[in-house]
Length: 514
Image (cartoon, rainbow, N blue to C red; front, top):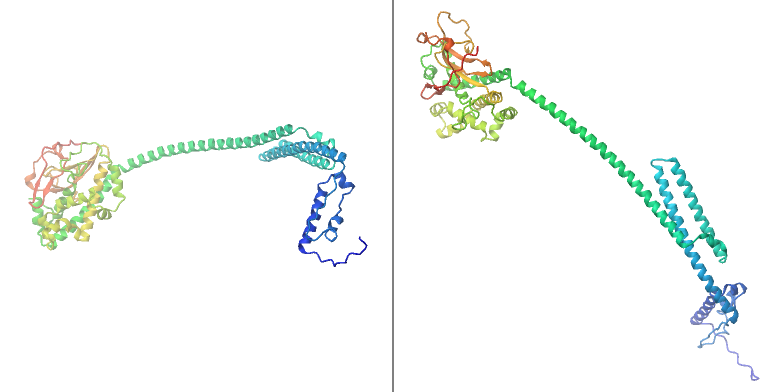
C-alpha cells in the first residue's frame, strides 16, 4: 500500500477453536435467515447456505486472536414496519382459528364416541334400525373429521382463506362436545339400567323358585311326618310288642341255663334251691325245677317295670297310665346301638346302672361267693358278672332286651300294664298260659297256679297271657272261683338268699275283660 509489498506470510492451518467459531458464525447466520420475513426468504437472503458455510473455509474474514462481528444490514424502514403490523394481525387470526379448529375436532371425536357406544348397545340385543342409525352417525362424524383435516391443510397453504368461517364458534363446538358426552353417559346409564332390570327379573324368578322349594319342603315335611306317625303306629302294635317280649324270654332262658350250669359246677342242690324259692310245689317232672330258676330270673328282671325309670330312682311314682316322655326316642337310640359297646363307652348311663342294679338283685353276695369262689368279695360285686365272657354277654343281652321292652311299653298310649298271677288261683286260659304246654289237663280237679314264670301284659283291651307253672296239689282244691280270681298288676318280689317269696299287698284287682 505504501509502495512496497507486504511480506507474504504462510497461512497457518485453522485450529479446532477457529473452526468452531466459524461454525457458530455460520449457524448464527442461518438462524437470522430462519427468522427472516417469508417474503424476503422467497426473494433471497443476504447469506445463502453456500455463503454461510464458505465462512468455514475463508481465512481472510477471521483475524487471529481477535473477535469478529458480522452485522446484518437493517431492512428498509417502510418494509420493516409493514411486516411487523401484518405479522401481529395474522397471529391473532391464527390463534382464534386454531382454538375453533381444536374445539371442533374434540366435538367431532366426542360425537363419534357417543355414536360408537350407541352402535355397541344396539348389537346386544340386536336392533336393526338402531344399528343402521348409529352406523350413519359414525360415517357422518368421520366425514366431519375428514373435513376438519382438509380445512387445516387449506389454512396452512392460505392463512387468509375464508374457509375458517365454516368452522363455527369455539363455544358452539364446546356445547356440541358436552352434548355428545351427555349422550354417551345416557347410553351407558340406559345399558346399566337394562342390566339392573335383568337382575331384578332374575331375582324375581329365583324368589319364585325359592317359594316353590319352601312349599315343596313343607309338603314333604307333612308327608314325612305322616309317614313317621304311620311308622310309629306300625311300631306300636301288639304284634311288635309280643315279638320283643318273645326275644326277651329267649334271652332270659339262655341266661338261666348258664346260671344253672354254674350252680351245678359249684355243687349246688338244684331241688333244694328250687324248693327254697317256691316251697311245696308239686312238679310234674324232676327237670321242671328249672322253671323255678327261670321265674326267679324273670320276676327279678321285670321288677320295677311299671315305673318309667325302671325303679332306678328311689321313691319313683308308679305309672298312672299316661305315656312317658321321650320313650320312643330312647327306644330308637338304644336299638340302634350295640349294648356291649354302650357299656364299654359310657358306664354311667341309665342302661349301665340298670345292669348293675339287676345284677345285684339277682346275684347276691352269698350266691356270688359260691359261684365265683376265687374272687374277693368287694371285687366280685363289681366285676364278677364281667369276668366270664359268656356269662357277661348273656346277662347284657337279657338286660338289653328287657330294657327295650320297657321303653317300647312306655311308648304306647296308654302305657302297657304288667300283671302277675297270684299263687293258688285257678287257671284261666284268658289270662294265663301253661309254661309246660300241657294241654291234657285233668277234668275232675281244678288246676291251681303254682307260680308265675313270665308276667303278663295288658295293652288297651288286649291281654298277653302270663306264663305260669301249674300245681296239682290237693291242698289248693276248692280255692277261689275262676270268675273271682284276682289279677295282680305288680310283680312278685323274691329274695333268693332267704328263699322267701313276698307279695305287694293292697293292690287293686283288674276285672276280667271278657
